[in-house]
Structure formats: C-alpha cells, structure tokens
Amino acid sequence: MLRNSRPPIAWRYCGGQIKMWRAEAGVSREQLAAEANYDMETVKSMEQGRRRPTQRLLMVADQLCGAKGLLIAAEEYLQPERDLTREPEYLAAEAVAIAMHSFELVLIPGLLQTEEYVQALMSAHMPPLSEAEIEEGVAHRMRRQERLGEETVLFNFVIYEAALRTMVGGPAVVKGQLRRLLQTGEQRNVFIQVLPAGEGYFPGMEGAFRLLESPECEHFVFMEGHGTSSLDSESHRVSQMAKRFAMLRMQALSQEKSRRFIGELMEAL
View: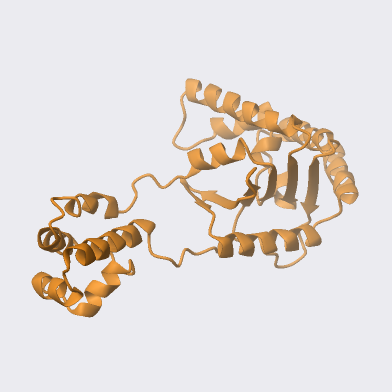
C-alpha cells in the first residue's frame, strides 16, 4: 500500500511560520522553549513540521514575536481534515489531462461504464441514494466519458479479470458492458488490456489507482476506497505507482488477446 511518510503539510507550513516570526523578532529557540516550558528539541521538531505545533507553543510564540494573533489563528488548520475525499480535485485534473493510465481490480473503470452499469452501481449504494442523486450521478459519469472522444488524449486501461466477471446489474447488463469495452477499444487513443486471474501475485492487489499527466507535464496518482481518496503529486510516490502500472501492463494480455478474452466472456453470458 502507498503510505504517506511525510508529516501533514499544515504542520510543516505552520512550523516554518513560527521559525520565521521568531527570527524576525530576534527570539532564540532557547527562549521560546523556555517560555513554553518545552525542551529545545521538541520546539525544533515543531518548527520543522515533524511534530504538530501545539496550542501552547502557538500562544507563547505569538506573544513573544508580536504576531498579533496570526500564529494563534493557525491552530484550526492543524486539526485532522474532516473531508477525506480528494475527488473534486481529481475530477478537475481528469478534465484537462492529456494522458490517463488506470488499473481497476473489481469494477469496470468509470470512463468505460455503460449507463445501465452505472445505474446498477448507484442503485446499490449504501447508504441508499435518492432517485435524484442517482440520476445526477449517472448523468455526471456520462459527461466525463466525453473525453474519450478527444483523439489526442491517451487512455490506458488494465482491468483485472474479476472486474469483468462481477455481475453488476445481472448478466444482461454485464454483457452490454463487455460489448462497450470492445467498441471503445477500437478507438486509436484507447488501449484496454485484461490481467487474467490465476497469475499469482501482481502489483495491484492492494487496490485500484489512476495516473494522470497534465498539459504542463505534471504527474499525479489517485487512489480511493470506502469514502476516502488521495491525490498525490510527490515525485517518489508517482514514480512508484508508475512502475507498478508498467509491471501490470507487462503481466496483462496483449490488446488483441484481451479483445478475444472479453469477446469469449460476452458470448458465454
């Protein structure tokens, strides 16, 4: 699993502000530590963002450095985020991306789903959604799929076999969904590969993910599950997931073999 080993950016930013205010006011770290009743190493850790700056340190630093409440005001931004989803940011990035590489483990990728498949997914949502929410959700996903028609945008999809066999909405819906995969895969900017089951361990067992490239050649990785999601641009983590996707593509069937595989599954329904 991809792990975020760096402290929250709010800790690092706030710690940096304490350090700058202290330097501007000519207050030493030793003075601040003594006034706040902390040892100097603890204050250093907070200033470097390795530990969350405490309310006590913020209040003492604000008074010593003459920050007039600006440091104290940072406290509310140091609390854990209540909204754990980064989906809005992801959707904004997806809307302008020039390339997307997607791995899906148990469901058909959203950009490839038929209207009936989306309807079945949202109708089974727990807690239940209202009819209006389902209708808007289906319409929104259909609008997102318009990007597939932009011939200069590259789409690579690797889909685990289990996703093709999951009976979302029943056999008729799944058969139509498999037909959609074959049709969309004929576009020259869309590449669909199947990762067959029975191959042993593969570097995608921990969950689905997507890699995006922006028009400015920035790279992002997006992951989600159970109401939470992450959007990361940190180069090491993006590189790590790009390597995983490259390995998944090598382990997957070729594009032509994938088409035959999907066709055989469709005919069996």
